[in-house]
Image 1 (cartoon, helix red, strand yellow):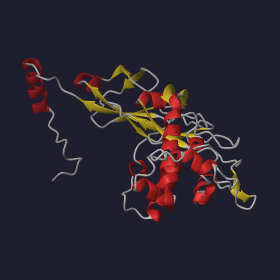
Image 2: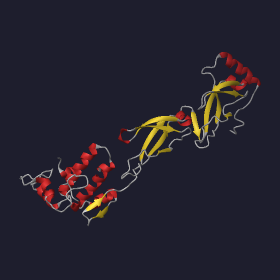
Image 3: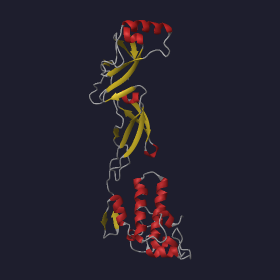
Length: 312
């Protein structure tokens, strides 16, 4: 067994209060009732309890410091060892509730009261731990795509203890929204119900969709020809592509509404709208024919697009 000072994380000159404080913190963290089914935690708790059984008892701490007993509490001089020291105490309270070799008269009552809220019985010699306590909630995060959040999806999530759970992401879920899964948290004590799993949803940004509440916004590039003459084009939405008519004479900044093509409200089911803002895009390299036409047209149709913008 490891050195009890190392197990509790205290120095050899630590005061009894410091030893007790270190034990209380570790006991709360590693108690088997708070970590059900974890054999490694149970073994760790045994080591912590064994270490405190030595360092929490002033006489046994002196014996250990003098080398009279080892880290397991065994008598190095062959005088019967750690087990006998407890078995022969004759005080009717030889062992702790989990059989880890410590006694309640070593000042552990208040530690377990912190852990379980137990009450004294039988003149302080024993304590009841048949308490009911709801299990703790646990928090997780799950990343979903923009479209998964808008349309709804199912994601597989790894929970505590290696448990796998399929989580339903409702259509219309927002970034940062928390979903509560009842009974999927830590197990309760004494037959009390388990806690809940709190799932924070992180929505990844989309390359061209932008969401404002239940509405979707999209900037749609259109050609010079489509802007001047009008056209019917295919426009992406969060529900798939739809046909949309571009009116003749549309300009950059012109906005059209696709009713009901936004995100559905998770409660009412009513969907928002999608707003499409046009952006006129010229060819990468206008050819000579286009340049010549624009020169002729511009000479006969003078206009200043900055007049309406109020740029003097």
